[in-house]
Length: 573
Image 1 (spheres, rainbow, N blue to C red):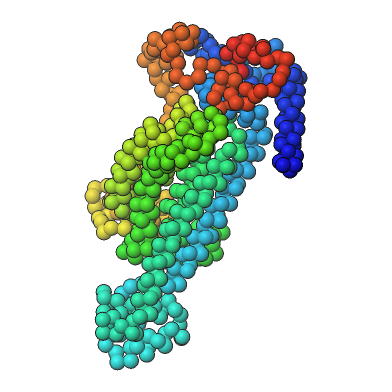
Image 2: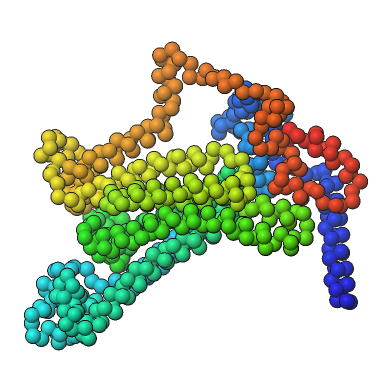
């Protein structure tokens, strides 16, 4: 009893100390204003305010500029405000250099994590490469012949005189059904071959599981890094999480498997390797694949296919599993909740993180766009992913998770812009994949030789002769030209294209700045008719996310004035 009473006294003392600190913070008046949120009655008022305070780099150095200033002295940064429920108030104090250094540190850690995952995948690949040797029929032709009476002795001698890889390759030539097919008649001698094949399959499975495990680990770490950058809105936070997750998973799933298994020292021009100083790096890679031949499909294509199949199901199953999980947790814990607040949180459900869904969506989409030219069946699993994602997300949002915040367009715009990058990647890899097939040269199809010289020989000769040979074939050339055309279109549309568009409109007699009236009601009309979705005020005390921080039971002389303050702060925060 004494120990219990002592513990209770400590809790009471701690609570009183926190109450005193809260009272002091409420009484402070020397704090600095970080930002102000203003609500306008008309859309035109918001537009005019943003234009009046539009500041650029030059206006800050010319005191006589026409841009308005606060008290005719201070430059203000005015921009369109996010929705009230979208603001992360605790992060607004992080600006300027603080945000820059945080972003720089987060990006550096992300690159370090990807390098670490590359080393892990390289280790698994090296262990796997020690169990087999590329070459197939060529190795069997140069090795011991099956009809030789001393073939078993020669194979065993290669184990000690050469390497385990050569020994396993000769065993494959002797025992495998597609080669010597001596396994049924010599099971004891071929047992080492059987064990090695099992180990190869296990290592292939381990390689896939390793990539999936690394992706899950990176997802958890990158969530923390995204929060560390202190974005000012929930949409900004979700966009950063989606970027980190997508980039890390795509690199691990699609690019590293190609980087590790490719024999890049034989593909890239030796002169270019010396110029860039990457000769030793490329030669140190354990890959043996020079092109997308049958060995590539058995080694790389199989891994990509398995990872895509897994990625098309697991994210959606995990999302759907939140529904039965929520029902079970509610039934088990509803009698154990001590306060109404805890019971409300139990039935509200977990947060619905849109960023993870966007990250998974972009990952599988980019993997499919990268390899679908060589593995067309990936399109089917893309359809499976998006169809199941629609229903799983719909069930989870309606039955299991908390109502999502009111996001702005930032995350959707980011994903829309990434579609253009995915299209360029699809055309680039399609040019390489279609260059392997036997096809006519583009000059035999009526394409002028000058086009081949300009677009293929002059451009690709610096990368290597293999590039010139592949891109001179008709299917690859048309993919390559489509890549150039689409890249040019994207550069123009994202640089001087919009300005050129407005100039053309003015030339033909149309005013590009003409406003289109949508018939939107005024703010107060929408407020009175309850036409606003989400919060109708920037008052932090009416925000569900922060309401508990302002509803403590601290005795304060100003408590009776809190309601008046809330009404006065409806339009300013």
